Image (cartoon, rainbow, N blue to C red):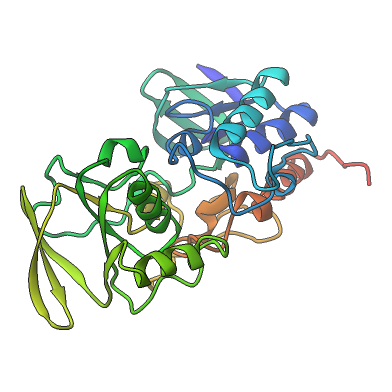
Length: 327
């Protein structure tokens, strides 16, 4: 049994930031990540470019140098990987936390590989692991994916992309440029307003010229091996189809948060309870960090505005230990 001051669940950018801060302040810490370093970023599309500029993705003041002002996925992977290795962070990869239970002096944590006890736990798991499902017949077919990786796979195929936000629009444009016959299906009346400002005019122009088909105010009702049934304002139609990218967003693991005893708001936002000055939840010693703090409002927290969570949390942990930080 390993005893820790703090165990950090999630090895993404904010989990790494928490580990850096804990190490600097002399805490006995461990980061547990169920996949590779920055697992969520690793699973982003191979050609993805961040909305944020590189300096806004920096953690702990460590410079992030990229070829362009807005870095790409491979540059981010290199940046965070080097931080982990050069700082010799205590991180265990490809290990999944299965339970966190409160005990008299902290927490008992069980993973699929080991057992730990910790006085404090930080949950920094993000939201990219659980897609918002369509809940329609045929969604389980092999031709359907809720994640997009590489446009080459869809070259020469009839591809339906469901969604109106950045992930869907990026996929539609990339796949069209690699030879896919792309049809966009959007629940709303237009391309999402939060689509990257340099991308939105591109997709609108491709739609207006007829290169990419679009059905607004429409929903998929059924997915079959060679076609889709779509409900449109003009009635129900059938579309020939080879592949479906259902890029309709993602959500935090609310079930895991509830199992921990964290209370969530009863409205659609499902906001977890935490003290915004310390990031401590309604469970003493249990903290939230990063985008998971936003519940279903996954557009509210990013790396750039949640990296401050690391020093806030560690400061609170140290104050409970009776340690006063220098100004």
